[in-house]
Amino acid sequence: MVRLRARHDTGKWRLTPDGVERLHQKALKNQMRRFSAGTRTPEGEAKLAANGKKSQRDPCSIREVRADLTDVYGLLREVRARCALMNVTYASPR
Image 1 (cartoon, rainbow, N blue to C red):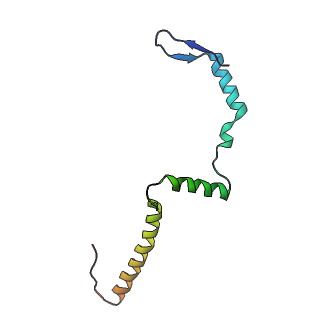
Image 2 (cartoon, rainbow, N blue to C red; image 1 turned 90 degrees about the vertical axis):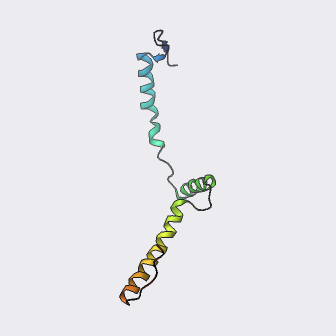
Image 3 (cartoon, rainbow, N blue to C red; image 1 turned 90 degrees about the horizontal axis):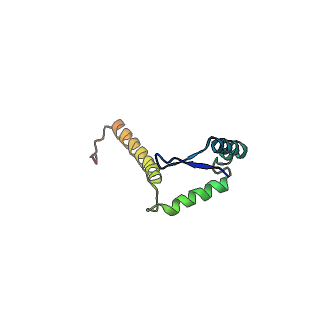
């Protein structure tokens, strides 16, 4: 058990130097940071994505909408380029 000592002048509890050292040694021994790397398998990543889909408000995330719009904008650029090659004027939606 880690010992605490009272600091009566500030009203806060502080760790004793011995307690700090014991916590440091336990952290070195356990090395929990090695196991907190996230998902490592495709199944785990799919489960993580499904969790995120449950908590979002709309059926499509903003990233999904932007990805879809990127395809549409690419098609519009192609149409504009071909119209420019044929010297065809068109009404811009903007």
